[in-house]
Image 1 (cartoon, helix red, strand yellow):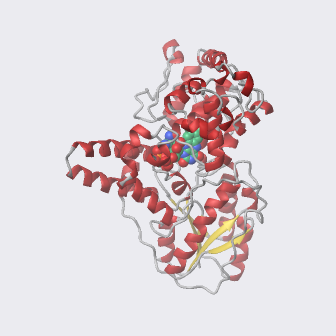
Image 2 (cartoon, protein in one colour):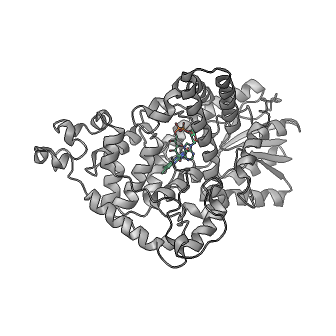
Image 3 (cartoon, helix red, strand yellow):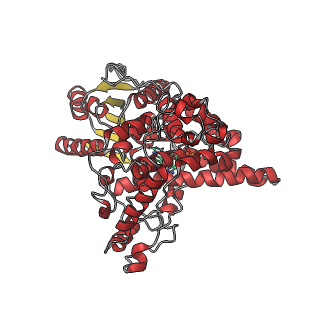
Length: 506
Ligand SMILES: Cc1cc2nc3c(=O)[nH]c(=O)nc-3n(C[C@H](O)[C@H](O)[C@H](O)COP(=O)(O)OP(=O)(O)OC[C@H]3O[C@@H](n4cnc5c(N)ncnc54)[C@H](O)[C@@H]3O)c2cc1C
């Protein structure tokens, strides 16, 4: 009996674990609902809702192969032991998972259990992330090679006399209600439709529209949750993109140039997906600790709860920031620029340690992918030591990204009486006192003064003795080789104070 343990790879096509297991005998395709995982502070009802769509879809796809998905709830080792007692397990198959600290510990326990039972656990590579990577040199070439390999077809499976089991409801799993009316539907069919519509219709204005909170909704691919939960494989997405690029290259007119530019940018981001997850794979502690230790202790470990609550619920009195957070709560998605801005505002203007706002965002993003998430959270909080410090101005971002004010007005209707020219700074409006402190709060910080103070505090750390040497070591271990930053240790004042720029932050 070959057990295929589905994790963040919820598909039958291009699933090498499933294909390899099917070549060796009877396959029991298994999803394990782990109540303890769903009790972790980064997990939420919207994740479960998206995942439930994917599992329903996977169950049908596997049934078409000959054997529907088997669902069991409980701790992985208990579930595997119960299966092994009835149908002795020869081997366990899965894809490598770069998950949160909890799944990392669980996998080590599963590995120990398999060893003790003499069960081989085959973990195959899922995407561009390489386990036990020695050096980042040549990483991008390795990504290209892996993505160019053939896509495996769905295998035929022999039916087994096993109870398929039921998928629990969110309530049954003990999850708090998490209304998200604008959430993307999960499942492979939805993912394939997003891919097709992006590559052939929606993606043309990707470059110019991606940072707009309104236009980005359509112009971005919206593939992130499908990649995060594995309904689509990165290889399928990369190959579909290359095929479309080849088609475009055969055509020549100027309009095609826009498409070509869009798909070049998109293709780069597919690399970023794995580049960021690789960081967590190589250093699981970045979910909990500053990448550069010189930042330890600069922000209070216990967050100011009033600030955190105001930020998370879109009640800071900074209209564009509040509109982004409210929109995120209702839809489960924000574009990259807006994610960077909301995180930077929590970390710089509100001076909150990144862990608590990072958890809040993890629960709000349908596409929560621990490796991308924690790397980006640290990057936007200035604690990596190797990235440009970007303190986004929430008022300027509002003017730049929402010039008509339509997005802000939609999500902050309390400002209906504030004239357009003061929408992003309602405290400057003549009628401010009629609205602020009543329907909508006064700003909880002076954002300009707060940004100045944050910049000084961050730069004081960067000027510290030894900062540059540690930063250089971090760059060697985690940095993109395309960033142009020396990847060997550099010491001295110049290296200590230099702004390190990595073109990976959009
Ligand atoms: C603080 C913060 C937290 C984030 N957390 C997550 C997360 O949990 N899960 C997640 O998938 N993305 C995360 N991102 C990255 C990025 O914002 C989203 O991937 C993107 O907005 C998803 O929309 P899309 O699929 O339409 O992206 P597109 O622009 O269409 O990009 C295509 C794909 O490339 C990848 N990608 C795009 N931008 C990035 C990036 N900057 N870094 C890494 N991969 C990227 C994603 O897989 C995405 O689906 C985070 C960014 C920030 C600033």
